[in-house]
Length: 357
Image (cartoon, rainbow, N blue to C red):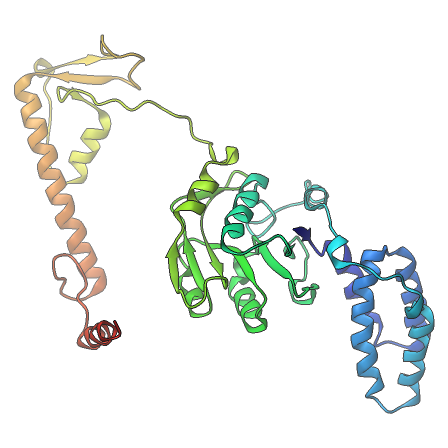
């Protein structure tokens, strides 16, 4: 299983493509300059670009085009190029990313933690046999996935820019290039028009510290539209890079203890509740607490504790009513048990789907 990214070839390909349409002499000089700077791996990609352009030039019936084509044949010495094995063209992705460490970054840049990426590759390996595959990573700052080299045994496993995610999915689907891609968390459902949406349960913490809601998109699952992937979820969130939260102990406190957050909950429900000085005492901790309370709390009398519990219950009920009314107002329709009802057209769709079984 090999991994290729196309960063090293991208600049040469773009410059070569720009210059090949210019004057004969300048293009020759520029091509000589570029070829001298390239390694065998880059020359392989450059050769592919040249072969395509040579076919185009041969279709043009004029002496200038023929001369230009002839000149490039001499410059590149195509017959003298050593054969290059794509499977051996492996690039150290981490070393490449290190070159961009000091550059300004956006949410579209390369922040995938190494252990998360490796976990995703392991999961994909349970779906398809990767032993004879070339894993491709064409997405990097300034990269050009459209003009990257995609061998027949290649599979794209990468974290692409979410800002152009639609274009990327359409591009790979139309060309039947196998892919398994990181994708946006909540807006990825549309991708099910073209491929399978794979759903995990948590946000992924990237190398810049951002916690981003992510799911995945792939064309490796046939006609499945959407699916959960608990195994992928477990693989990702067992990674050391994702264990960013401290394992804080959870404690249940006695009802006689009133916290500031409980007062906020009661207030949010629109319930008035107050405590007099002779009904409570301010405490900084409980004698049996193994550690210490966070901030000062209020210890209530038994009667006031019962009143507080009633206020909390009323607040919860009122909060539910308020949420339902707000949702109904936003929806502009009469809700049924707090839900937007299906229309007659949608019910007919459900009935048709039921008949397919």
